[in-house]
Length: 177
Image (cartoon, rainbow, N blue to C red):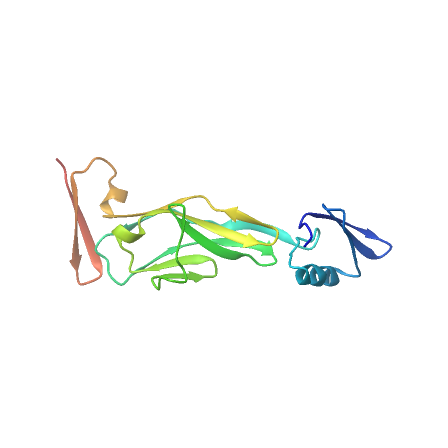
């Protein structure tokens, strides 16, 4: 197996790839080159053809109102890349279990959390966008749970209470100590 670090250039219509272990590979086209490298067990980012991921949208911190049921939280992530990026998410530095946990789903890079719960879902989330040219990690987005009044009236409040009226309207009041 050859090193995946390579320098390439055109020579007489042929693509010449020089690998770090001094192996030379000739290919007639980028497709031929990629096919040969894939067959050898490696993928290489082709200069001038491929590009590493660049964020177009990163997740933002948010406060999810406590007491809501059967709702979803969406943390946004979108990257431009060639070939297209794949996505992973981390919460507090640990991979989000997308395959094993049905509450989590990935939709075009965005992380959807169904029926979010404070004890299971609060934390710092980061999106990873990955392709053969590289991996980028988003800024941290904190998912917190609480009453909306903390957003409207920041300060040192003693308690925050939430009440449901007509199943969809939420009222919040603050007790100041």
